[in-house]
Amino acid sequence: MNQIPVAVLGATGSVGQRFMSLLDNHPWFKVVALAASDRSVGQKYSSAARWVLNEPMPEYARDMVVVPATTEAVPAKIVFSALHNDIAKDLEPQFAQAGMAVCSNASSYRRAEDVPLLLPEVNAEHIQLVKIQRQQRGWSGCILTNPNCTSTGLTVALKALDDAFGVKKVFAVSMQALSGAGYPGVPSLDIMDNVIPNIKGEEEKVEWEPRKMLGKWKDGSVETADIQFSVHTNRVAVTDGHTVCASVGFANPADPESAEAVLRAYAAPASARDLPSSPRPAIEVRSEADRPQPRLDRLTGKGMTTVVGRVRSDPIFDIKFVVLSHNTIRGAAGGSIYNAELLVQEGLL
Ligand SMILES: NC(=O)c1ccc[n+]([C@@H]2O[C@H](COP(=O)([O-])OP(=O)(O)OC[C@H]3O[C@@H](n4cnc5c(N)ncnc54)[C@H](OP(=O)(O)O)[C@@H]3O)[C@@H](O)[C@H]2O)c1
Image (cartoon, rainbow, N blue to C red; front, top):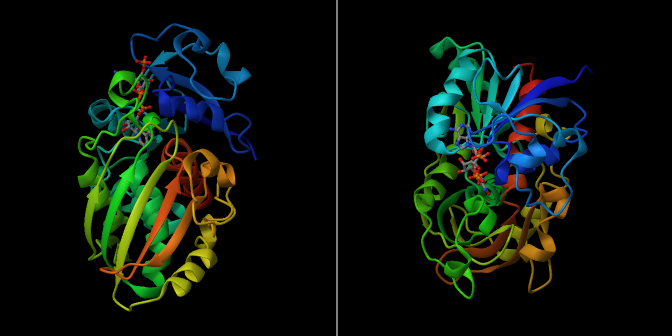
């Protein structure tokens, strides 16, 4: 296969760096441009980006010169967006209109009825919304979004349970890593020895996004799932990996053993199972009493696998469990790349 030219918008940031790393030697995609703000434009990537990942900056990226985030400066077919919401809102449609497929981490278009909010191992069929989007907006390109990094792991686990028992209500409390706030993010004096019980706008996203992703694809649109959510979101002093403690009530009550068996057996839809970034496995269930833990488990399946543990009875709901997902890999850059792979495989690029 000839490699498809791709670009990264916001390439110097926390998620942008993950894109640069995950796209190193990607079998289908070749990075031809990277864009950031005026602060970085004209500089070599190695000077513009303050590299924060554990692995070294990829060699291919070091001497690339950062360009402005304009359609003229970015000669790509797929554009990975790691822009902040306010900037993404204006810029992403320009790229879609210019014929590029925008795979976005921003929340600006997640709620749009004609924009897929996609986790391929959960709702691969929603990618068909791209056809409606193109008809309605007259674009030859498109916008695909991946969910908030806390919605991600929770939704994968809920999908397995929903298919088997029908999820009716969810109470969840997150413990979210610092990299989720970008770089430099939360000041050290605020977070050391501390928990911050508020992440602006996050609870509303985690209470709504799973309902769109778990919604049924019917007659060319997504019917939002009828599930009640109550979510608390917290920032904790962990570098990477969002942990969520969830209690779930079902339409058809199930015991923890059945729920655990369903989680263990869960497989992505066939179209999303064998892509280069497919999580292998989709869900890993840990049986130890004190797992998952972010430091030990966040890189399961190269950071793409959702890790679940402590599946047990809940005295108010039916069951409760802990779910962990790598926020900048599965919850951001890796998720966008997986979405782009599905788009290509479905012949929708
Ligand atoms: N971090 C996560 O775990 C996570 C997970 C899911 C989704 N997201 C979403 O992903 C997006 C990026 O988050 P982040 O944490 O990576 O942010 P970040 O570390 O603050 O990076 C922001 C990036 O945007 C660039 N930028 C700023 N203004 C720009 C402009 N006017 N034109 C072009 N580029 C511009 C910055 O370039 P300079 O370096 O030149 O300023 C930088 O590359 C956000 O929408 C966020 O909500 C993040």
